Length: 499
Image (cartoon, rainbow, N blue to C red):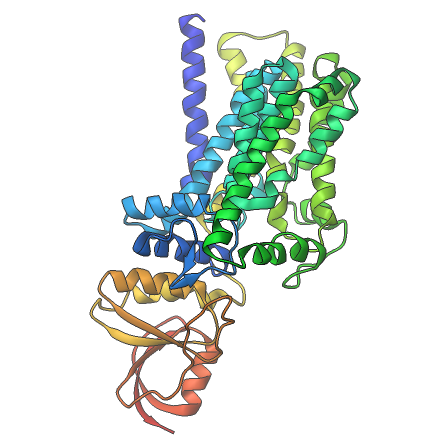
């Protein structure tokens, strides 16, 4: 490449990395941990750091029977907890880095597969401007799905390169990515396999691959690597495999859990009605059509189309449906949209007689602003202004309340029910010198949290904290109290006498 081309490439990469920063890392540590999965992963990682349960994630003092996934994500979170004194950043950084790696992978894959650098950058920018990718289980959350999405995207890209180039290194990389996906979220690692099998079956030129023993050896090796963790954990904690079946496979797939049973069109409704992939869903028909109509990209188009349809079939057939189950599909759809946008820009430049120099850069810049400015600003605003909201907001105020209390304060927190958000920050602030204990109005399910205590009687002079209305109503009905400190719905009270 000429010096000018090198400069253009380096400048484009720097601008791209800057564009990645704002949606992925801006205010990553500002919001306290979310109530359910994110906070629970945080407690798993914190307990791992403090007590060293590296193979069997624990929730406080007992093996976590509610979270049965392999611990790759929790290992990464525990590592960052050890090196960073910023708990929210430590819990979310693996997902944000996975988001950056996925965007870079799309940028590289677009150039490698389609020989168009714009296709890769456009694909990555579509991913970074997809609202669903930044939801509560996405790239700015301390949960499994962004990391899973990275491994499955690598799995698909490497397999496609193996099909195109017939170099076995890509097959082996695809297998390694599937192994890492399995160590991240178990059975979800296999959700693209039906599509890969159907793709090979429907292309006569590719059917010989199905007779290649290295294909099966790679798949078996990845499968053994995944299953080995489950067997090791079963040996350390008998009954674990039954929990996995109940939570991940037979139970969750065939029965709607926790009220998350919806119809077959659930994921289509989520994308269209709630504009979670807006405006990119409108480019999908054009992208698939452009891929399949062109001889050079037809096989790739069929690969992406079949992978999309079979993945949707697998997750739509499950009785339990959750919005974030669609996240591994978003990079695939982003590649399709990236192709459409690349062809539109190419057509624009061709219509303008292939301008060069400053004129070409100006046209490309205008195209980028016209296409990406609104969705990019929308996603950045979503990340920048992230707030806890809804009826469960009061259950996620404990971090900000505890920050305002003196470190030597000793008090008991009254909780209506299980609260993973509180439990994480109880451990964190006690490590910093606080003395925070907890008692519950309603004893949590032992499978969710073992060893909790229910409220009995608070002695006169006791300091009691709460943030939730049920706790406030109970204290008001049972005790005369004096307010020591208040903030929003949270109070630190001193018990005077029982009513």
